[in-house]
Amino acid sequence: MEQPRRITDSFPRRLRRRGSGRPPGRLKDKKDKKDNDKDKVQVKVRDCSRSPSQSLPDPALLEMLRRFDLSWEYGPCTGITRLQRWERAQELGLSPPGPIRDALLEHQDNPDVTYRWMWDGM
Image (cartoon, rainbow, N blue to C red; front, side):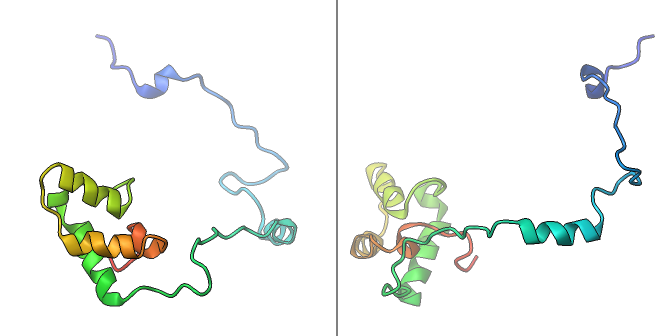
């Protein structure tokens, strides 16, 4: 009787080379890591399009938008702006709330209002 094939049978086997007498499972010594930290380039922080003079929107507005985000009756909200989601729901006849559209148009230059952020209270 033939044994069942495994997914690992489809790939060629490679021998691991052990370099410089390190024990298996360890990549670098802690001492090496400290030396490499000095050579690292400073990580660039993602630029936020909010200007320094632009303040955070009203918490009540953000709560209203969060409820809109969590409402599945208006369709998925992944990969599109809140206004695009509102317009799509309107075209599909789902009757999204009008105050949401008004708030999105009023604050369309503010990314905290325009986009749904994963960390905005969830």
